[in-house]
Image (cartoon, rainbow, N blue to C red):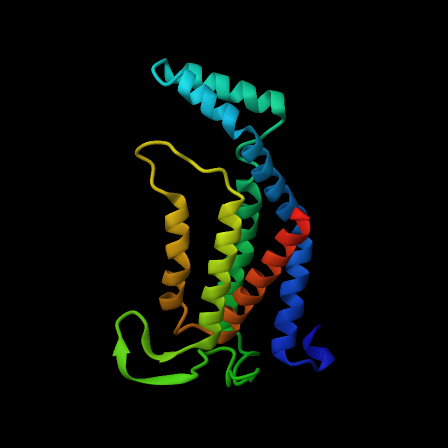
Length: 208
Protein backbone atom coordinates (compact mmCIF):
# COMPACT_ATOMS: atom_id res chain seq x y z
CA UNK A 1 0.00 0.00 0.00
CA UNK A 2 2.83 2.42 0.86
CA UNK A 3 4.66 1.41 -2.30
CA UNK A 4 1.70 2.61 -4.37
CA UNK A 5 2.16 6.14 -2.98
CA UNK A 6 5.38 6.46 -4.98
CA UNK A 7 7.54 7.08 -1.92
CA UNK A 8 11.07 5.74 -1.76
CA UNK A 9 11.58 2.63 0.32
CA UNK A 10 13.72 4.56 2.77
CA UNK A 11 10.75 6.78 3.59
CA UNK A 12 8.43 3.75 3.61
CA UNK A 13 10.65 2.04 6.21
CA UNK A 14 10.57 5.24 8.28
CA UNK A 15 6.74 5.35 8.16
CA UNK A 16 6.56 1.64 8.98
CA UNK A 17 8.87 2.08 11.98
CA UNK A 18 6.86 4.99 13.36
CA UNK A 19 3.59 3.08 12.89
CA UNK A 20 4.89 -0.01 14.69
CA UNK A 21 6.30 2.05 17.56
CA UNK A 22 3.04 3.97 17.98
CA UNK A 23 1.05 0.73 18.09
CA UNK A 24 3.43 -0.65 20.73
CA UNK A 25 3.59 2.61 22.73
CA UNK A 26 1.07 1.43 25.40
CA UNK A 27 3.32 -1.56 26.07
CA UNK A 28 6.36 0.72 26.19
CA UNK A 29 4.61 2.89 28.77
CA UNK A 30 3.68 -0.17 30.83
CA UNK A 31 7.28 -1.40 30.72
CA UNK A 32 8.61 1.98 31.89
CA UNK A 33 6.00 2.21 34.65
CA UNK A 34 6.94 -1.27 35.90
CA UNK A 35 10.64 -0.32 36.03
CA UNK A 36 9.79 2.90 37.90
CA UNK A 37 7.78 0.99 40.51
CA UNK A 38 10.59 -1.52 40.99
CA UNK A 39 13.05 1.34 41.61
CA UNK A 40 10.71 2.87 44.20
CA UNK A 41 10.38 -0.30 46.28
CA UNK A 42 14.01 -1.43 45.87
CA UNK A 43 15.06 -0.19 49.36
CA UNK A 44 12.26 -2.26 50.90
CA UNK A 45 13.29 -5.30 48.85
CA UNK A 46 16.88 -4.82 50.06
CA UNK A 47 15.61 -4.71 53.65
CA UNK A 48 13.77 -7.99 53.14
CA UNK A 49 16.88 -9.59 51.60
CA UNK A 50 18.98 -8.45 54.55
CA UNK A 51 16.39 -9.54 57.11
CA UNK A 52 15.97 -13.04 55.67
CA UNK A 53 19.52 -13.60 54.36
CA UNK A 54 20.10 -16.45 56.83
CA UNK A 55 16.50 -17.69 56.90
CA UNK A 56 14.55 -20.11 54.76
CA UNK A 57 14.54 -18.84 51.13
CA UNK A 58 10.83 -19.54 50.98
CA UNK A 59 10.23 -17.01 53.78
CA UNK A 60 12.20 -14.36 51.91
CA UNK A 61 10.29 -15.09 48.72
CA UNK A 62 6.98 -14.94 50.54
CA UNK A 63 7.87 -11.59 52.15
CA UNK A 64 8.95 -10.19 48.79
CA UNK A 65 5.75 -11.35 47.09
CA UNK A 66 3.70 -9.79 49.92
CA UNK A 67 5.49 -6.49 49.27
CA UNK A 68 4.75 -6.74 45.54
CA UNK A 69 1.12 -7.46 46.29
CA UNK A 70 0.75 -4.52 48.71
CA UNK A 71 2.39 -2.04 46.34
CA UNK A 72 0.70 -3.36 43.20
CA UNK A 73 3.96 -4.27 41.50
CA UNK A 74 4.22 -7.13 39.03
CA UNK A 75 7.93 -8.04 38.67
CA UNK A 76 7.22 -9.80 35.37
CA UNK A 77 5.14 -7.07 33.72
CA UNK A 78 8.24 -5.52 32.18
CA UNK A 79 9.05 -8.78 30.36
CA UNK A 80 5.65 -9.11 28.69
CA UNK A 81 6.05 -6.13 26.30
CA UNK A 82 9.49 -7.41 25.25
CA UNK A 83 8.08 -10.86 24.49
CA UNK A 84 5.28 -9.36 22.41
CA UNK A 85 7.81 -7.38 20.34
CA UNK A 86 9.98 -10.40 19.58
CA UNK A 87 7.79 -11.69 16.69
CA UNK A 88 7.94 -8.23 15.06
CA UNK A 89 11.72 -8.07 15.40
CA UNK A 90 12.04 -11.57 13.96
CA UNK A 91 9.69 -10.73 11.08
CA UNK A 92 11.80 -7.70 10.16
CA UNK A 93 14.97 -9.75 10.47
CA UNK A 94 13.55 -12.22 7.93
CA UNK A 95 11.91 -9.65 5.66
CA UNK A 96 14.64 -7.15 4.77
CA UNK A 97 17.36 -9.51 3.46
CA UNK A 98 14.91 -11.54 1.32
CA UNK A 99 12.48 -8.86 0.10
CA UNK A 100 12.41 -8.65 -3.71
CA UNK A 101 10.91 -5.17 -3.52
CA UNK A 102 14.04 -3.82 -1.86
CA UNK A 103 16.41 -5.17 -4.52
CA UNK A 104 18.44 -2.32 -6.07
CA UNK A 105 16.38 0.26 -4.18
CA UNK A 106 18.75 3.10 -3.23
CA UNK A 107 18.41 5.37 -0.20
CA UNK A 108 20.87 8.05 0.89
CA UNK A 109 24.33 6.43 0.55
CA UNK A 110 22.99 2.86 0.23
CA UNK A 111 22.78 1.55 -3.33
CA UNK A 112 20.68 -1.48 -2.41
CA UNK A 113 18.54 -1.71 0.74
CA UNK A 114 18.49 -5.51 0.47
CA UNK A 115 22.29 -5.64 0.72
CA UNK A 116 24.90 -4.03 2.94
CA UNK A 117 25.87 -0.37 2.45
CA UNK A 118 29.61 0.04 2.07
CA UNK A 119 31.08 3.48 2.69
CA UNK A 120 34.63 2.16 2.92
CA UNK A 121 36.33 -0.90 1.45
CA UNK A 122 39.12 -2.30 3.59
CA UNK A 123 42.33 -3.66 2.03
CA UNK A 124 41.99 -6.67 4.32
CA UNK A 125 39.21 -8.77 5.83
CA UNK A 126 38.50 -8.67 9.56
CA UNK A 127 37.30 -12.02 10.97
CA UNK A 128 33.56 -11.97 11.74
CA UNK A 129 33.35 -8.39 10.38
CA UNK A 130 34.30 -8.41 6.72
CA UNK A 131 36.26 -6.20 4.32
CA UNK A 132 33.95 -3.19 4.30
CA UNK A 133 32.38 -0.65 6.68
CA UNK A 134 28.61 -0.29 6.78
CA UNK A 135 27.47 3.14 7.98
CA UNK A 136 23.89 2.10 8.74
CA UNK A 137 25.27 -0.68 10.95
CA UNK A 138 27.46 1.83 12.81
CA UNK A 139 24.49 4.17 13.31
CA UNK A 140 22.39 1.24 14.54
CA UNK A 141 25.07 0.12 17.02
CA UNK A 142 25.65 3.68 18.32
CA UNK A 143 21.92 4.31 18.75
CA UNK A 144 21.57 0.94 20.52
CA UNK A 145 24.44 1.86 22.85
CA UNK A 146 22.83 5.18 23.84
CA UNK A 147 19.43 3.51 24.22
CA UNK A 148 21.07 0.89 26.45
CA UNK A 149 22.66 3.59 28.61
CA UNK A 150 19.35 5.39 29.02
CA UNK A 151 17.35 2.21 29.55
CA UNK A 152 19.70 0.63 32.10
CA UNK A 153 19.69 3.83 34.14
CA UNK A 154 15.97 3.25 34.63
CA UNK A 155 16.53 -0.31 35.89
CA UNK A 156 16.97 -1.07 39.60
CA UNK A 157 20.52 -2.14 40.41
CA UNK A 158 20.79 -5.84 41.20
CA UNK A 159 23.34 -6.77 43.85
CA UNK A 160 22.76 -10.48 44.19
CA UNK A 161 26.03 -12.38 44.67
CA UNK A 162 26.92 -14.88 41.99
CA UNK A 163 24.69 -13.18 39.41
CA UNK A 164 26.28 -11.68 36.28
CA UNK A 165 26.24 -7.91 35.90
CA UNK A 166 23.46 -7.52 33.33
CA UNK A 167 24.36 -3.88 32.67
CA UNK A 168 27.85 -4.86 31.51
CA UNK A 169 26.40 -7.54 29.23
CA UNK A 170 23.93 -5.04 27.74
CA UNK A 171 26.76 -2.58 27.03
CA UNK A 172 28.73 -5.26 25.17
CA UNK A 173 25.71 -6.25 23.07
CA UNK A 174 25.75 -3.18 20.73
CA UNK A 175 29.43 -3.84 19.99
CA UNK A 176 28.57 -7.43 19.07
CA UNK A 177 25.79 -6.20 16.76
CA UNK A 178 28.37 -4.07 14.95
CA UNK A 179 30.05 -7.27 13.78
CA UNK A 180 26.89 -9.29 13.27
CA UNK A 181 25.02 -6.77 11.08
CA UNK A 182 27.91 -5.45 8.99
CA UNK A 183 27.15 -7.89 6.17
CA UNK A 184 23.35 -7.82 6.51
CA UNK A 185 20.80 -5.82 4.53
CA UNK A 186 21.21 -2.08 5.02
CA UNK A 187 17.41 -1.76 5.20
CA UNK A 188 17.45 -3.92 8.35
CA UNK A 189 20.16 -1.85 10.07
CA UNK A 190 18.33 1.31 8.99
CA UNK A 191 15.08 0.00 10.53
CA UNK A 192 16.75 -0.91 13.83
CA UNK A 193 18.49 2.49 13.88
CA UNK A 194 15.16 4.28 13.46
CA UNK A 195 13.54 2.02 16.06
CA UNK A 196 16.26 2.83 18.61
CA UNK A 197 16.05 6.58 17.99
CA UNK A 198 12.25 6.52 18.24
CA UNK A 199 12.45 4.41 21.42
CA UNK A 200 14.76 6.96 23.05
CA UNK A 201 12.29 9.70 22.12
CA UNK A 202 9.40 7.67 23.55
CA UNK A 203 11.24 7.12 26.83
CA UNK A 204 12.01 10.82 27.19
CA UNK A 205 8.36 11.72 26.56
CA UNK A 206 7.13 9.09 29.04
CA UNK A 207 9.65 10.20 31.67
CA UNK A 208 8.61 13.85 31.34
